Structure formats: structure tokens, C-alpha cells
Image 1: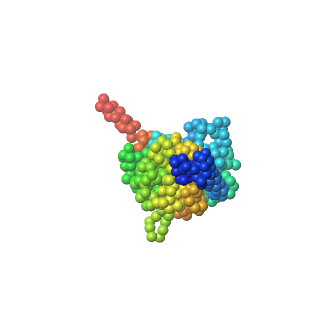
Image 2: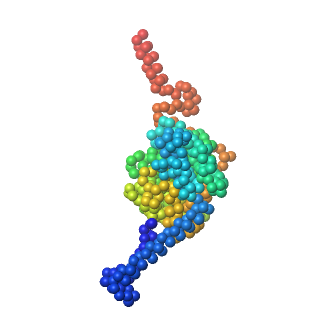
Image 3: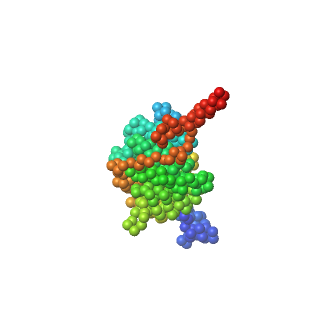
Length: 452
């Protein structure tokens, strides 16, 4: 039971107890004690009934408008626990243990839409990031194939609405980290064709074209001052394709650059409010004001902040509560409007979760808390699904596959890694693709001439 539901003792009863007097003219302290206990019990009964009322109301709403969660790392758990071997008996999603997510928990939590994260760590950058990303996309597709009664893979807002009607979890792919495209617009387009519908521009590392949140802490050095020229091309190509731009994990400069450049609304798939927890993974108020619903008078984007449940981003401490998560939702609603609020739990991607939000089954409790805080039904439905659907539909309307794609490649000198070839960067690629080998050959020839 949340603190707002704890019974409050009657002040008159408290005073009578302190003075040793009785209430209502009765005689003897025993009678006064009895009245006090009755009062306490009545308060507890009212609190419990109120709690049940809000919980029942939450379930009624969620049966019609289930939650669309912006970020879940179950595919990463399937990699680390089972090396993506979904046929392993222990990997059965109906009985999967030691995770925040499984099928029974999803059903109990009224989860009707989920962006599954295709995540690969930053240490894959300039190595096998693309391969690893493809493998995680494959895991999501195989989840839909193995459990068709629960999951259906979709790629548009219409598919989400259809999944709601069918009582299945609309499963979408979000790629978490711009390093997964290896600075290639061709790879970005290919991921779109494989069903990817959002791309987080960075994870916790810079890409050659965008700066990450650690720049704001001083742990990384800014390289692109937000977005480089090629980074701007990535944003434009995402708009053209219909890929949602995700600004979780990016620097504030990158947030502002993308918000000003994008023709479509963007999302923060799993970020909270910086004003309540001064962690650089969260969204500051000046950025929240750019996220506001659009109006004719102001340059506002109608974007979406999907609140993260990780304790460190909720309370800036190791411990947090459901009520504190609701505080973040309240704050974003106050600054950016009710249309800017969503849920991005980050389940199975974090090590610490708030008391009361231990797994995906707990969403109705959070919705009940919002109702208790006098959120209207329309505002609750917006946070659950309608706000995300509005953003997704706007992204789809902006997309235009008849428009010529962005083609200018990233400059060769911006790329790193010794394993790269340089085909396409020269009219004579065979002359340049192995400069070290070429230098070694020339050295051998020169030495040979000197010995003659």
C-alpha cells in the first residue's frame, strides 16, 4: 500500500489519548481506547477500499487501452543467459525465471505493445556491431514465431491497433545505439526493411556523427557538438524512412539538434526528468519545453518522454518507489503536457527497480497511482498508448519513400578501426584498401634495390 493510502488518525482521538480523557461523554479510558481503535480501523478500511477502487479502475482502462512500453531488454537477457538458443527448455517464455519479463507477467501487466531492444554494447563499435544487432533483431522475430498466440511482430501504428483487438502483444524492434548502423545509411535502410522502427542515436559512447550523454558529465569529449553533418543526414533519412528518432542516451546538444532538425516527433524511449533526479541520462526542463505538443504560435514538436524506472534515474539513489516514478510522470506532464508522457520501464536492462514496480506485471499499480493523483482517464490512456500512437502516426505521415534517399557517405577520415576496407572512397580502391601491406611491400623492394 502506498504512503498516500496509510490511515490518518483522528486528531481528536490523538488528543484524548494524550490527556487520558474519553470521547463523547463516555466514562473510562477503555472506552476511549476502543473509539480510537475503531477510528483507526475505519481509516484503514476507507484506504483499502479506495485502493481497490483505483486498482479496479486501472484494470478497466487497461483492458481497452493496454500499455505500450518504449523499451524492454529481454532480447539481451536471452543472449546473455542462453546465447539466443530459444529452444532451450529454460528459455521458455511461459516459465522463464530470473527476469523481469515473461508471458504471464506481460499478461498480468496488461502490456499490449512493446518495443523490444536490439542492443549491442559499445565495445562492438568498429567491430561486429552490425552482426550482433542483426542477431538481436532475429531473436525478436523468433519470439513472434514461437509464441504466435502472445506476440505478433508489427511495423506500423495500424499493426499495433490490430494487435490490441486480438489481445496479443504488438512487438516492435528498437535498435539501441547508433553504432549499430556502423555509420552507414545503407545499413540504416536495411534495418528498416527488417522491421526496425526506432533508432537510439547513441548509447553510452559517441558515434563518429553524434555525441552521447557522457559528454555532459565530462567523461567523454564532444566530437560532433551534437550532430555532425553526417549525423544530420542520418536524422533526415530516418524521417524519410519512417524510423522514430530516439534521444535516450544522447547529450543535451544532440537532443536539441535533433529536435530542431527532425520534421517528425521524436521519443525518449527510456528517460526520466532531470529536475527530479540530476542524472545526465534524464531530460532537462528546457528540452522538455521543446517536447510540448505543437501549437501554431510556438516551435514545439509534439514529442514523447517515456519514463525510465531504473532507481538511479528515478531517485538518484539505489532505492526508489513507485510513488517517485509517478512524480516524474507528474513533472513531465506539468512542464511538457499530458500528451508528452509515456512509459519506458527499461525492464531486463537494469539491476535496480522501484519498490512496487519490480517487474512488468506491476503496470496497473502505477496507473492506479496516477488515478489517485487525479489524472483524468484521457490523460491515463494517453500515457498508456495514445501518445505513442500519435507520435508513430505523425512519423508515418512525414515519411516519404518516393523522395530520393540520403546518399552522401560519412568522410573516410571520420571512421575508425583497422578492419575496414575503403571500397567506394577512391576511383582505384584496390590501390588503397591495404595501405599497410602496400607500405611493407615498397619497403621490401627498396631494401632489395639497395642490396644490388
